[in-house]
Image 1 (cartoon, rainbow, N blue to C red):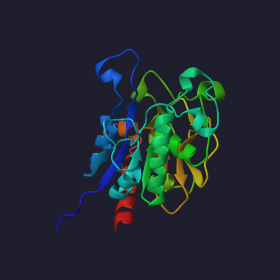
Image 2: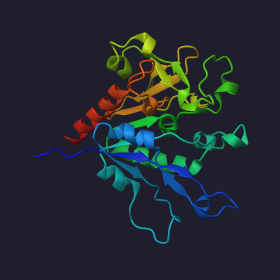
Image 3: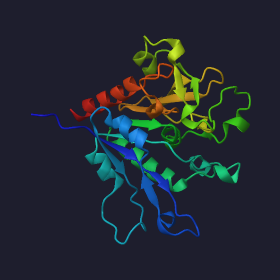
Image 4: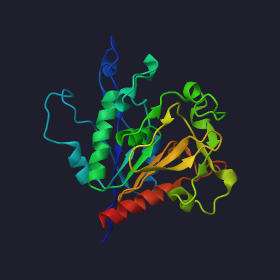
Amino acid sequence: MATRPLKIGISARIEHPQPGQAGLRAKTLQYLEQSVAHWAMSRDVLVFMVPTVAAGGGIMRSNIRLSDYADALDGLILQGGADLSPQSYGEQPLRPEWAGDPMRDGYEMELLHEFIEMRKPVLGICRGAQLINVALGGTLYQDLPTQVPQSRIQHLSEAYDGNAHPVRFVEHGLLARLYAKADADTLNVVSVHHQAARTLGRDLVVDAISPDDGLAEAIRGTGRSFLLGLQWHPEFHHPSNPQLLDCNPILEEFLRNVRKRRW
């Protein structure tokens, strides 16, 4: 009998209606970035985007809850996207453009907690790592260039997925174990963010840092279920590029824990 494929949920990016626009621009759009979906699918898993269940989104509302998705799916990936709202961790935006998306924050926090409650594995990418930290009581730097001016690493660039910098894995951590034989010269990651973890949430530890400024580049849960947040974008790391970290071991470790939880 063939093994049933793993079912992995990916949280939705949200594009809100634009005032004065018509057509799709006047609608709320929820979508996946193709690269993160294809990265997960590279291991022959079924990917499902998890939409919000907020009221007012359609003509009629069902009784479906985010807990139903957590029950039906085997694991969760929190994808990148817009800033978190500083209000989600008890602050006011230092600038209007850093106000973030509180609606998405609330949706993803509820989704995350449902998966944690069911002890199902969760992997957060970029914003997803920050979401994990804030959902568990941590805070963020709203803007690295102004709040960590001593950093010489460029965490955000117009090069976008062409912007890379080195990371260092914390001794005895999960990533240090997965990459025990890796060449230190290949520990470069694609980094596209201007915010980062400031104070850690409960039951979280730092698993990787940027060596120049000490900022957290990966955080890991210490509870009974798999919980890992990567500040970088593993889906942008093509295996044919020897200058970037091969992120397939991370995906395989996530899926190994998904299978262990299922069976």
